Length: 361
Image 1 (tube, rainbow, N blue to C red):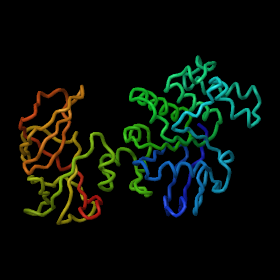
Image 2: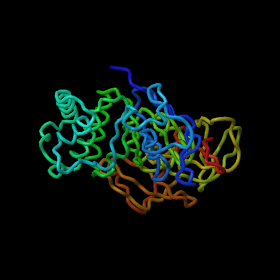
Image 3: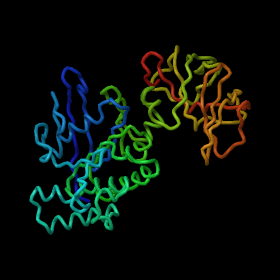
Image 4: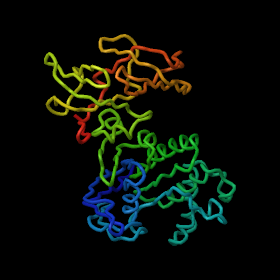
């Protein structure tokens, strides 16, 4: 596998008029890495991607690709290719013509164009579609063509700006697999923007979770899921969303305990980031980590709503103190609204956050 260029963003500042979008942002993308920029609308992720592509001007800072400062280079000279949310295909051109258009404009020899288009079509399994026009393709096929148009450029860095958001759920799942397979085959550096945390968790080598123009956490999908750095990351990553219960941490019989929502949760198995803090805190627990059945720390939960999801069910309950929370049960479970059942939170599975700033404790 050939070595691929990395991407380095150094002290980036971007403003739209007087509105500050990004400031002092640093990010290192390793060669051949698949990095996902994840966050809600307006967090700055697409703006950052467009800055790497050269479509947005930076007010300060530097952008390096493959050891070269490209901060003021034109997009065509940066050694990147981009796939947009909209397919942006020429309606009167065939798939073959759409994929080869950029190469023709660049003066690439016809034989080389034919070879590259053929290779990309084979990778994306769109060979039988080469002579069709976009109007004759499904949404998923059009997005494959848009990806193929980027692939034929044979660059080291590929940028994806929410490429699957216009597709239905089944097509998104299929193309996620294709994009992951593509990265494994090409070994190229890829930066992918999405607000869909399932896409991020399944595709990324690392995820940069963004909020209000700031990278909240940069880590592997497993670490972000298991050890979110703050409450925002915890709430944004995970489906269904993490449950939160407000309360306080105290030490009882030399052991830390969380009390809130009418609950008393021993924290003997929790690994604190520093010394055990005392005072207001928020406990987070993912629905899939709630345990059903008798246990020393179990409490009686009142079932309000049951959402069957086929292989499992999402059950909405309330703690004895009236705090709403959800849990995931495998199979149908036979649980009904109005039921009461013993549940507990294993202390090793919880996350604790400071009430004041939301930082992980």
